[in-house]
Length: 68
Image (cartoon, rainbow, N blue to C red; front, side, top):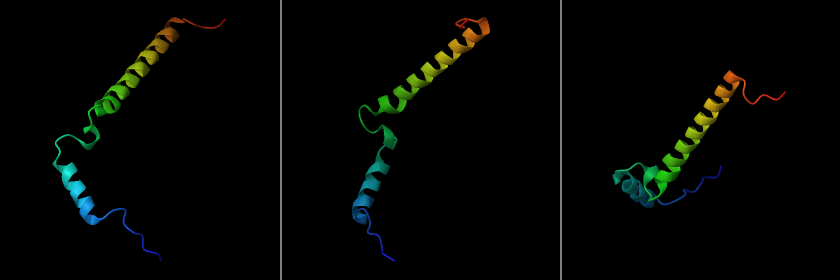
């Protein structure tokens, strides 16, 4: 059996672990514009989905938009 080599040195990994564990914010919100991709886009998709679903339910309840 072949022994796999590690991806990086243990010292480098420990150094990165200490760095990321010392930061106050969660790891996925470190960058300047990370809030856009982790909060704003999912919120916009959820809002759009809810609005389109509500519109569809309203149209079905009132019989609007049926093809004859």
